[in-house]
Image (cartoon, rainbow, N blue to C red; front, side):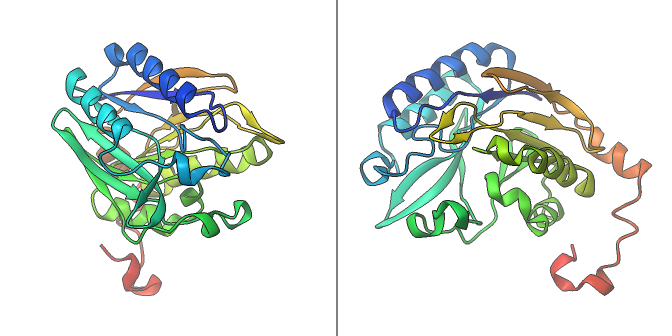
Length: 262
């Protein structure tokens, strides 16, 4: 499966400009990819001041357009994440679309207290897997990557690829580099981490989007500028990596507790 990662420059608060730009990037990448991935909160960026008026609602024009685009192209699209209002609550929500329409949605579980996300958003309450062709993809968003239990559970439930759309700042770039590779290596799965670039006030986004293989090596890695990078998910790589390094067989769930048992 060929994956295109849209390392997009997000203009904070400019929904129209960001939306037009995102669709242009998708059109450019579509001929070379089976799955396309956008970053976190790509319509509004870090500008949360007008979320009430800029949030999406289920079935609105943008979500319909994203679903229709995936259907028309015959592609799979993990549409990063979007602020979504439903039943009076606001969520940081990721959507997965395919040739058949919407496949899954996921609400960010771990809200970033340092950015006051818990005051603005409602946290999700479930893990989400999406069947993308023959690949079981786990959903996560940005700050989730700091919680390894989540990725272990997704792996136990069958995910061999986990996506991480993000808006991660340059000030914590080393953490980004370490965490995305660690999540891949410790679970022996692919990690597709798609970050934004650009800035908002004193926040500069780090880029460094990447596809990491189950052994922790980079399949594809971006720098700090806007770009589209491509990488290939190899179906046998997970099994091969687990045969060569017997992490799963050597685990001790009798000591760790029931929460980490398959």
